[in-house]
Length: 184
Image 1: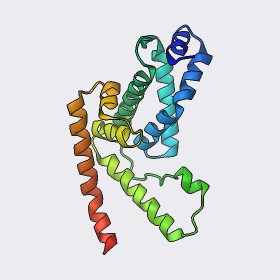
Image 2: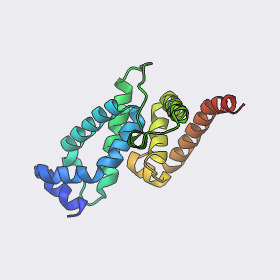
Image 3: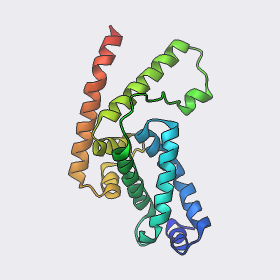
């Protein structure tokens, strides 16, 4: 069945159809939540909130339009709302990369260094303004084009491009001093 057909059934109360839709988009939703939240636990909570919100709002979905942009817009709004309600915590946990957990590295020193770099990136992302952070995560974690991000967030294309460029510039300046010190 197509996304549109499943969505129509879900709008009529068919939970199995809704679950089938969510199963199709679980990976991009989780990637967005994980990159936005910065930890596995928070990403799971955020994903759960996204699924609840999508279920509650499925009746608002226009089946004549593609489902994925609608779902990603719901997810984006949940992420932004979550960030506004989340107090900035300084005790961020160190995330585990799936590949890292699956393949224990023989080079422990390199593994620690890699984790430190990921944590620095997560910390730098956390310092970006919420809207900019969301756009950067959508672009680089979900590999969406500027146009797709614009369609899914409702933000004009030039604004998306500008905010992502500013976000990348801020990340580069936040991370560059640390890289230069290590190279010496």
